[in-house]
Amino acid sequence: MLVAAAVCPAPPLLVPEVAAGAAAELDGARTACSDALAVLAAARPDLLVVVGAAEADSEGAYPPGSRGGFRGFGVDTEVRLGDRPEGPPGDDGAGRPLPAPLSVGAWLLGRARWGAAPVEGLAVDGTLATGDCLRAGRETAARAGRVALLVMGDGSACRTLKAPGYLDERAAAFDAAAGRALGAADTAALAALDRALAAELLAAGRAPWQVLAGAAEGAGLDGRLLYEDAPYGVGYFVAAWS
Image (cartoon, rainbow, N blue to C red):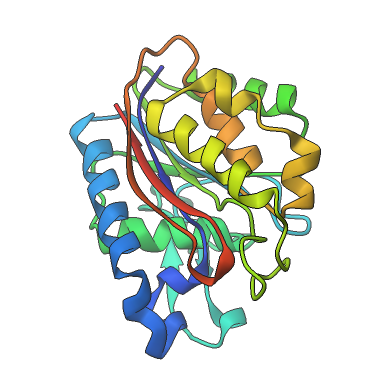
C-alpha cells in the first residue's frame, strides 16, 4: 500500500557539479526536494521505489545497489540506488546503468543520507499508455505493506522561446493542470493528462506521474505543492503526498 510519495524534477542540472556556475539557480528546487524526502522518511516505509522515464532500452526494474552517474553530462559524479543487499562472492552490484532520471533520484537520496528503507528503481517508457501506467502503479504499491514512491519527472519543455522544444502556447495550461493535480494529490486529474499532448510538449513526467496515480488509488493521501517554476523553459514541480 502506498503511504507517501515525493514528486521531484529530473534534470541532471539539479546536481551542482553538472550545473557548475548555474548551480545556484536551482537552490530552491533542491531545498524543496529535501523537504519532500523528509516526508517520505517520516512515513516509515518498508520499501522506496524511485520511478522515472526510461531512456533507450532502459525500461524495467532496477534492484538495490544499481549504479548510475553523470559522465554523459561532463562530470564523474557516480551514484548508487540505496544500499546493495548481500550478494554472492565477487558481486559488486554492477549491472545496467540507471537512466538519467533515476540517477538524479539516487543523487537526491544520497544527498539526504537516505536510510529509512530499501530502495529500488522503476523506469517506465515515456510513451506508455495511461492504463498501463496506472496498472504499473497498482502493482508497485502492492509490493510491500508500506510503500513510498520518489517520482522523477518534468513538465512541458516548451514554455519559452529558448526552451528545448521552443514555445508552445499550450504548455502553460498543461503545466498548470499538472501542478494543480500534484498539489492536491488528485489521482483522477493526473490520469486525465493527455498522453499525445504530453508527448508534443515534451513533458517527460506524464508517464511517471500516472504511475503515481495508479499507486495512490484508494490510499487517501493529501498533497502539497512545495515548488513550481519553469527555469530554462521547462516546468519543474516538487510535491509531497502523505
